[in-house]
Length: 332
Image (cartoon, one colour):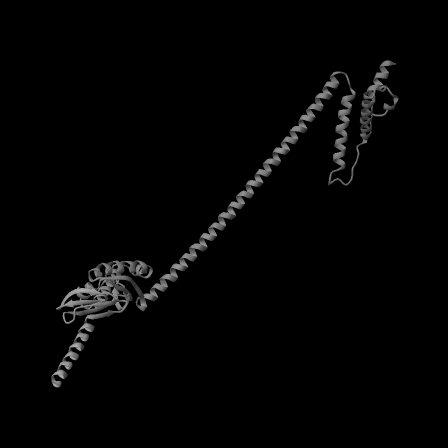
């Protein structure tokens, strides 16, 4: 009897241990950032997400453990022949993320290797369709084209290509030297063009300044000539008016007016001689006494203007009073 009880206890203990093992085998804990695929008798059944999950022990099993975080894949350097037959060496880096664990596990064998080869192939295709100058100056365009092509090709695998970056583009040494010489020549050409353009602008501005100066000078001469002509016109008008007044005075019988006119001109002539810059010595003619007679005639005109007697004996010396002596002779 005791032997039977001992055997039953051992059996129960073994059964309990078996139940515990079965329960533990059906409980699966998935860490954050990972997904597990569940297979039942070798066929995909479902995907386990991060956290605590239950499966049927001995029936279901874990197929693949996939990293769902964004990952980086280095693209090794490779030679590429450009459209203008230049050989370069290029490498890069690819960023990708698994978005569908089932397709990433069962649609492609060797996911990383597939993405790597796909990226390298498209690098040769995209860069080979461009000239060397375009490759060196349009990296953003190359990256955008590669991203579009590779992401479209990897979409059936449940993978999202987030970025593709070309790290280095290395032309041959002789090609680099030729490019340096070309760049130097181009810069010297631009410098010469800029220098010539500066000289041209300087000459244009100088010519414009001279033109404006000549225009202003001509305008000044024109204005001066206009003012001179206007002054001469005013002087001629005054002279004509004076002549007219003298003529009218003579016509009315006023002989003293002509004496005033002649004496005024006579005095102005002597004034011009006396104020001449080159005049050092002034020699008066013998008939200088006629000037005094003219002044006496002016005095007579003044006397007549103030109502005094015009037959005074003070005008006996000079030419102008001769007319008075004739009048006296006639009276005699």
